[in-house]
Amino acid sequence: MLFPTVEFGLFFLLTLGVAWPLARRLAWHNGFLLLVSYVFYGFWNWAYVPLLFGLSLFAALVAQRSQRSTRASVRKAWLVGGVIVCLAVLVYYKYTGFVLQNLLDLWRQVGTPPALQLESPLLPLGISFFVFHAISLLGDVYRQKLKEPVRIPDALLYVAFFPQLIAGPILRASDFIPQLAKSPDPQAIFVNRGLMLIVIGLIKKVIISNQLATALVDPAFAAPQALAGPDMLLAVYGYAVQIYCDFSGYTDIAIGCALLLGYRFPDNFNRPYTATDPQDFWRRWHISLSSWLRDYLYIPLGGSHGGRWFTARNLMITMLLGGLWHGASWTFVIWGGLHGMYLIVHRLWTAVPGLTRLRTSNAWRWIARLLMFHAVCAAWVFFRAPSMQQALDVFARLAVSGPLTLAGSSVVALLLLGLAGQYLPPRWHDALENELSRWSAPLRGAALAVSLFAIELLGPSGVAPFIYFQF
Image 1 (tube, rainbow, N blue to C red):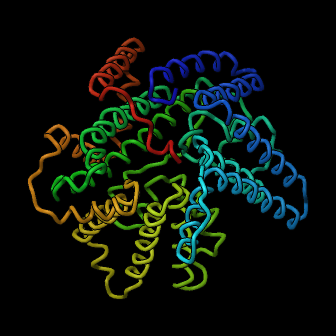
Image 2 (cartoon, rainbow, N blue to C red):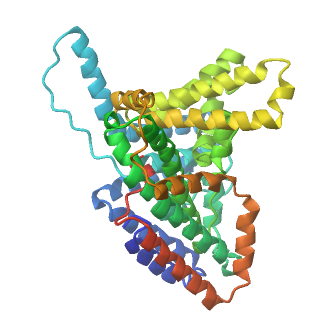
């Protein structure tokens, strides 16, 4: 029942229909949303609902004990202990097989290891996201960003709230839990914006991302040895557009669903491929994760205080761990390491004296934008490839001459559309929302129905899961 399926649409409509009549009875309203969030997660695998509940309850209880303490040392001890438990859960489910396999590989370098049948535990859906939410609760309580006492039901709903449960955006406890303390106001619901975001998200996911995946990216990365440079280059560009439309499409749908339920989520993307440098890119891509890594990892490591090489070390550690967060594979570590290197090189570049005029010129802005896009695409190869060898094969095939055979004109058009969408002025979204507000309710309903029908018609048969569901 994962969105954007028809089953999720029916589930969401039913949730809306019950949640709003309960809005004046806050405890019933929030209890109902918590129940449907567990039901939503249970459609994937009911056996893991106790894990979600148990981790959420643990974080809530630790947060309460931390809030009640007046001594900073005790509060810090609760924070450290809570974070260790949360990370231990993440490490067990996500990295057990990876660690054991690498230990066996090292053993083979010096001797003959025992014949072991390694089986990793089934990876719970969205575990990286709900573990980060639990840690955010602990961190915000420790930093006293949550002024009101933590209530167990609110903490449980914060971690499990179904629009963001599977793939974010990563919500800060200090931003979302206060929203749960008061009943949603029907007069403050931006219905047009919510519906528009859902439709835009579906267009990105169902039409652009899925078509690029099935017609271009998946065939190319499955057998790169069979393709020449033009096809492989187009597939690399295609994946850059695919993952953006896939993930930002999910975020649009999640934000739209939350808006219709009366809650506000933070923006998670801001035209990332228009970035002119690595720092700018991470201010625009997966904003909730990059800001989380900054506040809960980079700054506690020391941030940029302590000299150039100390800063470089902190940047690289942050990005390597950010890469490993995405998956238990050396390809993700390489992806994170490349972005760490980009950030370090950019810091060194901006420190070179006498180049201010060049760096602020319009010509350099476009050159930097082009360089940054291709640097991101190069890193995406490691993110997408299932193995190091396959990633290296992709790069090797880029140098092979040959005709363009894999993609037709419609696929190229979708790729260009996905890139062109990065340059649409944000005011166009506001203008569209204002225009919709002038339409009558029946006309808006008809426009929504036509849009959904067109999306279903133009999309490929079947809907692949969102890429970030695996994290």
